[in-house]
Image 1: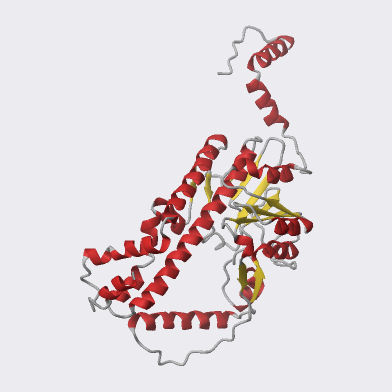
Image 2: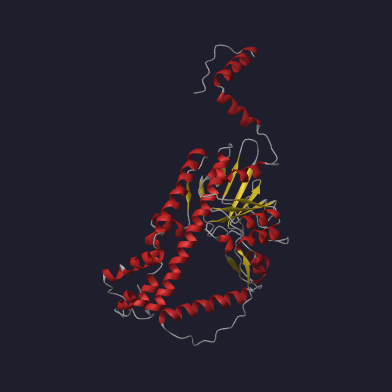
Length: 400
């Protein structure tokens, strides 16, 4: 593969007239990097839509919305990955980077995009499967009102709030609010605003939080954590050997609005200089970075639990987890859903947890209507007798 890349290195200094057969080298490169894993992508996408279609039938939802990134990947995984090579490949044929540099950067970009999207697919599948389990218990979508479940959080915090991805409710007055990858930063304008919301930048972000009740906004900047305390914190684990891996946690020191702006300008200048092949003449400030730390991947749920203090921490693993790891997590009162695969029924323990000790507030009017519709003949007989006692006769009643 590297030899083929060397053949096209610097063949068009302007990058305008790149032959079609050279462009096709990007597809060949993606096949070389990903190999047979594209087949896995299509299989995972199929499993996601099986649940979504069933959810559409059993819960009153009209559809769903993905992020632009995820939508592109779902529509055509290979084509999406080829797009990730556009800038690097353009630099390669112009001779701006070497074949070796393209090989390293391109492989990194393809693997990163593939892994990120596969993770998003499994997360969306898990979220949808929990909703499906609740739909079978009589829950309906209450929020968003337009009836489309949004799997993307981009731009949702511009109003200064953190809204849910979905809220479901039933006729017994029970509601559950779902937040994917929250908390995220909310909008700010100056130093004082940024100081208030900084915790939202620096706090850790679990895959999903669930709240018992109807929550339209979970921002709470007055406490130790910048959001209301969740009832459940959930992590989805899609990789075969995820518990053997390490995670690097970045360090965050508080920034003023001025430093934030200065960092943004420096990044902009640096990026433009790289594209234009220029050097920066203006003196740019240097910024000290906070040290991060490494943590075992399976320990991250313990960290989330210590920060957010939920009623329960949950790990949903697609594959079988090492027995010793499961024992260690369960010792810390973490619920481990093991060998989940793509079986929605495997997530029933989470739904059982949600429904346990949940306060019921009966909606008698709604329940009475439901009873009448399920037992129409019995209801019509009762209604006719009721009307007769009130002296009302000769009325034709139909519930069709």
